[in-house]
Length: 351
Image 1 (cartoon, helix red, strand yellow):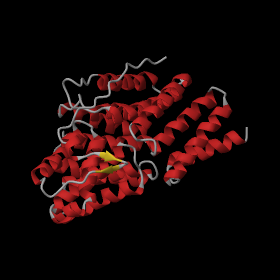
Image 2 (cartoon, helix red, strand yellow):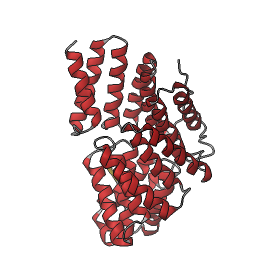
Image 3 (tube, one colour):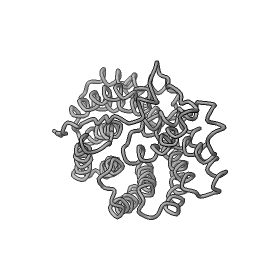
């Protein structure tokens, strides 16, 4: 039985969030032309809030506010719009949103960064990394192609031990795992971890995601000790953030971690734990506004898998059907997870 400590959900009061942005029936209060200085401070918030604090909803809200307001089209420079589209796309990815709009933001960021800086800039590399993440659920060959370009560009632009470089190589490693190239993935994870260590970024949300994704490598290699070691390290790191000392918002990173933990539990026969963690994670995803995502559907499918091994095919079918309905409502029938769900439903129907 795995025992995970209760993880604190940190919700720091952002100094501009409630004065500028307000959620009203799903919409945002737009910025006005009189708030030029405030707008520059909001723009400068994008990077630290994404890379350090993990406040992805806040980042998405800022980006959407500027992009959706026609006023700013004539006020902001091309480079600023490149950054806005980049973080509009990346924040959606980190909130498990794989809709077409996410890809369009990343492609726009790529195009605008080339227009502004020429080829092989940091912004282009990060946009390519995002596109790799986007295609990781549907076309692994394409995802790995983007990943390789991203690692090269980002290392050149940011340096060998920058957190961006570590994360880009981590993405490549993870997609190699999903492709079945575990030997190559292990080398890449080792290299990415050294970048985290040498860059002194091992006490970060990004490193928690690194540990979470590497646990899938060990799971594929059937090494339970290493898989659960990484899972437990990631949980401990997420628990370590204290709302009196940091602005870190670990909700979405914890949700991602929890979903992966369900997969690991299923793989090593902890099926009751998988059901418990999976159903709790669905509630957390609803609370975070992430219930219309591919990860939400995948989480339901993982619960279905647990019920198959618990020899409760009726409940398994119900969970797989819910997953199928969610994928179809999202229009994500090209997703590998959707294909696996269809195969499972067909198998269950034949029993």
